[in-house]
Length: 248
Image (cartoon, rainbow, N blue to C red):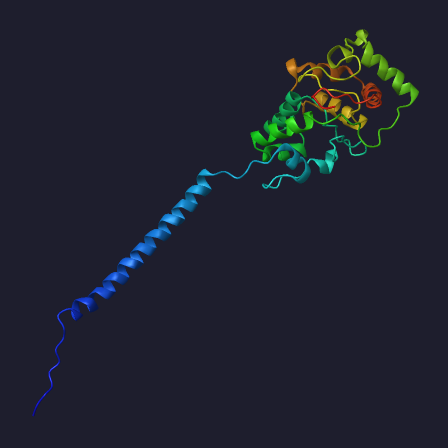
């Protein structure tokens, strides 16, 4: 009986063997490409930082890390808020603003609201905020009240001449004749909320604020009675705000 014979080409078998080999090489190449692409992504995440926010953005909307917008307490234009006792930031000296934010962050100016906020900001973000607010036009806080005559007279005397029987120098000697502030060390008092100014005198006295040059304010605050602190705060709150940071 004749049995048909099948001739297998000598080229066919190597071709069949080559197919799995090619597939393996393609799979390895694809895997290597994925690893390279993923490694590049990780490198970009590690090396390429997120876009830095400018001071205006932080003031309006806060930061991506969860720090709230400054405007929520200090007002859209940085003018502060009388009722809440939140100070004016607009038009203050850049150096002063940067120093105060750093002081909140390091604890030399102790405040339960501003401490966590300043600590949540990077040094670059604190500088950006200082630059932003220094460039704004000085605006008085919302709802500034007029002091009564008695408080105004006493406050004016303490501000302009001091009381040397108590070794109290005039505030004007450091903060300027109109309370406009002098440089980065002596901030403006004019146009700040009375509640804020009085609270700062209390903080100096209590030692929870201790970030001034030569610790001058601690000695002054210790010599002021509560009534005198209230009077001088009311006097300065009624004066027009002045920009020293470069704002108009």
